[in-house]
Image (cartoon, rainbow, N blue to C red; front, top):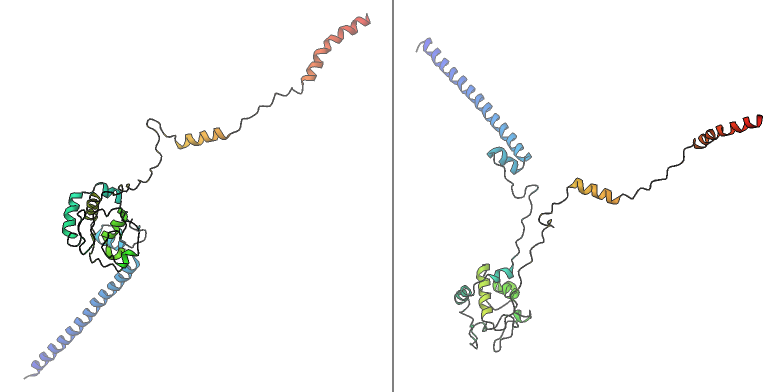
Length: 263
């Protein structure tokens, strides 16, 4: 191999080495720039809230739960009186046969089963049925089966009476529960009256029809007039120069008298 061939080989190796070095430097610049952007992005994300990030990224601003200014959810109050007023005892009968008839009898004078007979249960004492042995957990509560007590009991028996022998999980759906209570009331000859619905919150006072509310300016002017005390007007004082005028008016009368005495 001649000198020219050796030079070509060395030149090719040198060009390859220079190319690798340039590629290494270029990759280092690119990746370091990407890391810097990533760090800046993380710092920006930490500095802003989740709600602000969603606004900036998706152009759709929503209030994120837990963000500053988010209001606490309002707890809904179950109105038992209103629910019982619209309850359906026929649907309650179907639910009773599907969920309760395995352990309970509701016929008048019917025998006890795994649970006591429930005829006339609404308004009766909790452990009133003769011939049935109630659990100590339920016997220790005492009281009567009011609509409110039945609602809590049927909703979750184990939570109502800790240690009860009743293994029923409960009727958690409000409509099913109030329908069953309505069916129990229909089979209770001395059932008390249904509880009244919860009273609505009073609204703000509204002016009578055709009577416009006074504007703020008019109301303020009226109060100012009513609060001002009557002003007493002082009588006009006589003018200070009145005596001088009187003396001047009487002067001509004295002159003729002096002339008469001279004559």
